[in-house]
Structures are given as C-alpha cells and as structure tokens.
Length: 215
Image 1 (cartoon, rainbow, N blue to C red):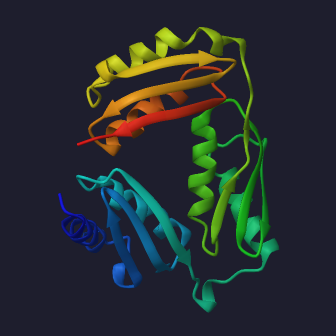
Image 2: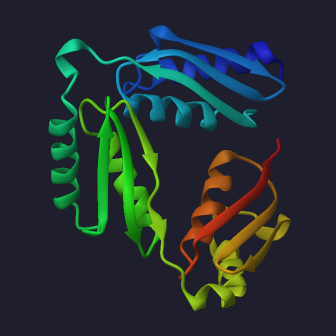
C-alpha cells in the first residue's frame, strides 16, 4: 500500500467517525507509520482520532501530535476541574477511592494506587471525558503481588482462548511482576487484545510490549 493511499484511508476513517471533527487534522504516512497533526476540541476527541487511525489496514504505528484547543466557554479553573474529575470518579464503582487527581492548566495527573490495570484504565477514561480536560497523565501505581511470578501459563492460555487472536506467533515471559510479550500480529485490534490479556493476570505491574503489527 502506498503512503498516499494510507493517508487517504486514514483521512476517510476520521471523516467517517462522528465523534471526531477532522477539518483541522492533517495526516501523513511513511511506510505504514502514520502521524496526526492539527487541533481538536477535546482530549477525548484526540484519543478517538488515534483509535480511528489504528483501525485502518496497513497502519503499523500512530504518532498522535494533535493539540487540544478548548473553546473559551469550555475552559475551567483548575480547582473546579479537579472537583468534577473527582466527582466522576466517585460515581464509577470501578475506580477505587485510592485514586486521586491533580490539575494544572487543564492538564490532569492521576495519582494513587490500584490492584488492577483495568481500574487504572477506567480512571484515565473517565478523566478524559470531563469537559475542560486538555491532557491526562497516568501516574497511578499498580500494587505488586507474588502471584505475578506464576502467571506465564495463565496468560498464554488466555491468549490461546481469544478468538480474535492468533497466539501461535506470540511468546510470553515474566519477571518480578513484569510481563514481556513478543511476536507478530496482523492488526492493531489483535495487538490490543494481547496486551489486555497480559494486564488481566493477577499481580502484573507492568507489560513490556514488544509486539509488531505486520500485514
């Protein structure tokens, strides 16, 4: 696939997504590596644009350089924004009370500790949806567990059970709570499924993602 064709396909996917205003987004491609530049109206929109690009066949990686520029009526004082983020956390049962948020100039930094990666992902997702947020930095720490030392076979089993994955080309190693996954998959959706399976193991504190997307 030529770079121009890939650029056109990504542009069409951005146009097709009603959650994304593609008017101020520029797309470039270099041998499967896609870069998004320009401006969007919210941090959530920036995230959705990246997901759109990753869905396109032929995309190997996405560099998201989009800037969030809020309308004046959407700008918030940091104290008010932090209050709204914490209220949103309190209404979501998946986010433990150990998660906190700091805000500076619209940039939200997540702090605290959780037991599971899905709790950290949920906090990031909820914060990203609060009006006025420009960026989210996740500094939440995962608690370690001795169970992480014995999860290699469990993760491999989860990969093999997943109908959306061809696990034959993936290898898994574990060390002190860190899971390393290496290999090749055929799409970004397969990549994300494999990484999610690794994070779902009990006691995992980090995932070293060495998976390549090849077409």
